[in-house]
Length: 137
Image 1 (cartoon, rainbow, N blue to C red):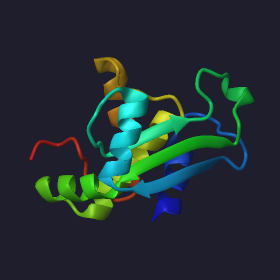
Image 2: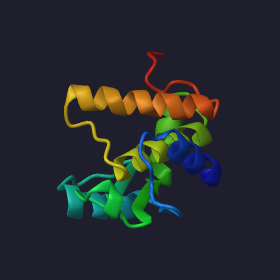
Image 3: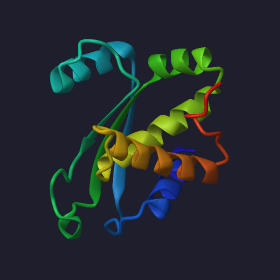
């Protein structure tokens, strides 16, 4: 599922990614992601996903094939999936797509950027036959 998710995301992404582009995916627990979240985002709590891009603020033509790392917190994802009445796989896939999009330059720091990112997530997830995670329950 990871390969299919990242392959679909890279195909639908509006950028020409480097040949042989790679993403490192790490699964961890809440304790470890909290350490990372505290160290890199000054947020002393667990989160569901963190992304660390290898190509920050570099022109696309000079990107390294290693796009970066996506860290997924299994415990948080399990809790959120249950609370949102989603399968673990669907929620994890959404967060993997979200993390991937951060690696290629998407963010949600303002409303317009958030809308762009959410629309790209919807497009990728629809291709993977996963319901829109932003629909109101």
